Length: 94
Figure (cartoon, rainbow, N blue to C red):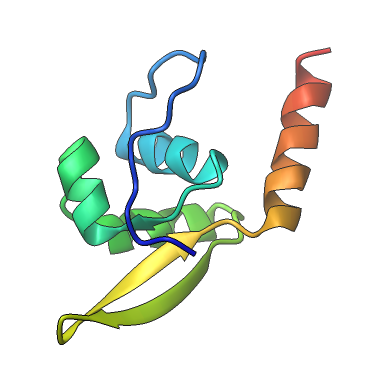
């Protein structure tokens, strides 16, 4: 698991809402932290967006990490969730 993220590159239309942005980022298989969300997307309350996505049914994994005496959460989608979401997307496109 890495704690450094870059904005995902996809051929899809750019998401508009913060929920869509965070979901699109996670769907690339990348991790995201509060710092990543702010640096990449100017999203200041990642924990709330993660809560909203979980409430909507997305299974998001998380771990609290300590780096330079600072504690923060790292969020990601596990491989099974990514495969499920990918198969749903592929079926809808048919």
